[in-house]
Amino acid sequence: MNANQTALKSRSASAFDVERIRADFPILQLKIDGKPLVYLDNAASSQMPQPVIDRLVRYQTTQHANIHRAVHTLSETATCEYEAARRKLQHFINAREEREVIFASGTTDAINLVMHGYGRKFIKAGDEIILTTLEHHSNIVPWQMLAEETGAKIRVVPINDAGELLIDEYEKLFNARTRFVGVAHVSNALGSINPVKHMIAFAHAHGVPVLVDGAQAAPHMPVDVQDLDCDFYAFSGHKLCGPTGIGILYGRAALLEKMQPFKGGGDMILSVTFEKTTYNTIPYKFEAGTPPIAAAIGLGAAIDYLSAIGMDTIAAHELELLNYATEQMNHMPGVRIIGTARNKASVISFAVDGVHPHDIGTLLNQEGIAVRTGHHCAQPVMQRFCVPATSRASFAFYNSMAEVDALIVGIHTVQKVFA
Ligand code: PLP
Image (cartoon, rainbow, N blue to C red; front, top):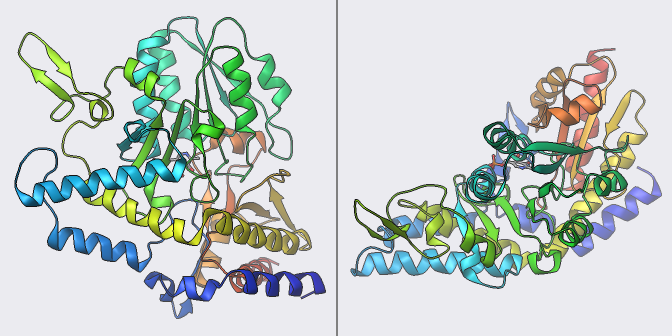
């Protein structure tokens, strides 16, 4: 270890007690084939701390009933807790109003809600939707479905060899037919942080609304939707220490009011006759049926947990992990990092000469190290870099420098096996 790395390690240890944090996560004590688990697949899904697990148990054992529908005590308690979770999310992203927070099943569901609710109402044949090369399939496929249905066109912002969006090209794509922009805040495949604030301001100057896919940003940095001035912002609970099956769509109230519902059913109505249905007010207009009540309350607990640590603190620790891992990998012959944007968050995609990513994943797993291998649901990114797949290590705030060291040793082992 060189002097820089030693300084980095001790600075990190003094600023952030990662061992104390790790003690909150029971799953991190696991051994895989006798080796301590080194969990570096956080971009796919993060782990859950004990306070969130406890909150789910407390809800199920003492508070569960259906919400919004009855006057009995349990139903009122569950309703209060569900709506309290909504307010926690409102504050987490600094939304103006709690009715701007809609519970969805995750980022994918939230983006589909915007496609159906906004896109099918306002985007017509010949209109143009701008997406970027860096999008996850969940911010591509719904828009392709809409384009097929309506005859709208999709325009794509290219990237450079570092995995950065070409902002000049983005600006050139705007014309009188541009109706919508969808952009990832952070690329799940490369970790590039996109200049979404600038992109939103530019789109607004052309009267175009913007949806930001925040699935890989909300868990790793402070998000302020008023400061970004975005129209929609989506993310998933299971990537920020919450349960699966829950996420949110933030939407600007004025736009949500104008949109049509995505799903029809109970709770999203004010009145129903066979002649006509009057829809409920926002956010309920977009929350048809019994929602994932426990998951929403669990997500609220996850927000409490993350907020107590502080998103700035989380971002700073993860940047140290990223810089440390990047520096080490840059010194490994035969290892190439794919995605070298100047502004990156906690993801390292890499290739090892002569070794298929799936073999890397399998051999690392034998060392207890969990990384993701594949196209990461971002095939256009793979096509841009002419690779079928990459290996991806993605960090969370509970990862330690020692785990980065374990990853580096693991990659050396892979190289030795294939030498
Ligand atoms: N968008 C991005 C950038 C992602 O990384 C992911 C998941 O990895 C998604 C969207 C989809 O999230 P979910 O599967 O939770 O709906």
